[in-house]
Length: 214
Image (cartoon, rainbow, N blue to C red; front, top):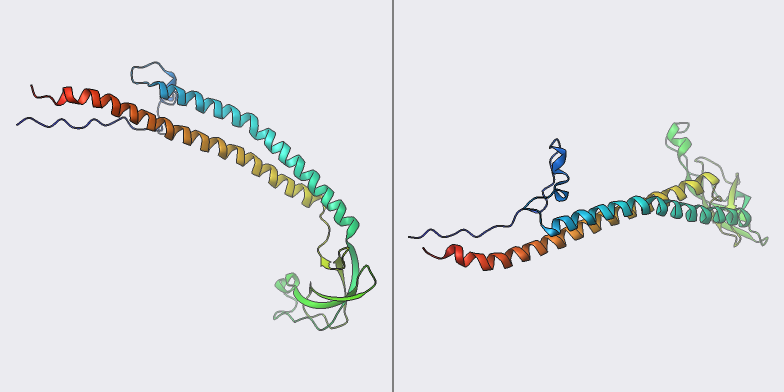
């Protein structure tokens, strides 16, 4: 009985060289050899192009995003400083007492309490704001009021504007790097599918001659 010829299997997809292997394995796509396919060389050129593109675009994107964000937040801080006002307010009722008065946690804790204050238009308003625990009714506190008379937070500081701009710059850098990695992975999958299709086409021609009985 003739032994059945096993179906040919394509070579694995770009096995990553393990740590500690000889450096020439890392650059196997660039070396001339009979097993290197045109798609292998194409993948190497694409990888090199993507690496150079990321190295050039990432710092530029980081600088552009950071500069734009810093200008935005600096303008926002200036606008807030012009339109927000620090005004006195009085507690409408007693603030809750902390279970552990005088403790480090009590010093950090704030409770929402209704306060009464005068808005920019001169009208008396009430709203809730966070205050220290244990304050009695009619205690005076300072609140930030916007141009519409609502309670708001303090204007952005210079450090806060720089911190937010730095965050956007880092996000831009990571975005470019991840885009490059995604493009490299997508081209690898596409070229692998092309290799499989060519392998199937070649095997469809070769297999009948291999499996023909002598």
